[in-house]
Image (cartoon, rainbow, N blue to C red; front, side, top):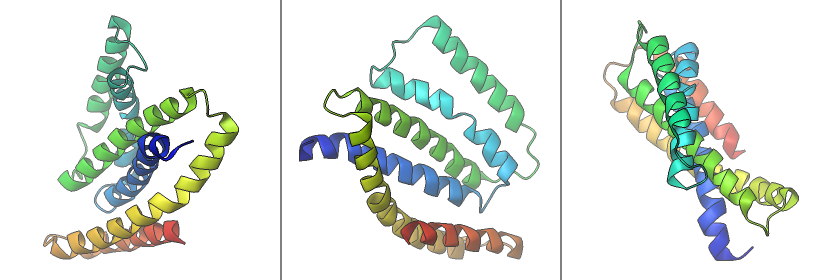
Length: 173
């Protein structure tokens, strides 16, 4: 695998994975685990949209119907959330988008005839330690700044922030 293939296929997959994990962790500072799980169930929607965008799948009425049904189901599930937080919702939705992106990029990686599953395993193990390291460092710094600037943050939200910070730091180690 050349450097061009590496930076065009492996690096975006690694960044998508790192952003998926870190945005999911960041959302837990602001929203409950159950609400985050309900919102993350929208990942197949974004997976299909990225599959259409990357021409991995051709759009059809059946697939568009699946997207609509999943969207309505997620909307009905999260519509009555009593402890809604805008930033938590944004972070978990971006994590769902990154999840769809990374799985589409993984499919592109596996479709390259040069790459076998064993070679992909090597590259994914290699990239799964380097890029999350940098993203986790940036994420931790941004989360500290964001939480310090968030004036409405009460003590009950500082404990999950510390847990998220520890999870991000454990990714580094």
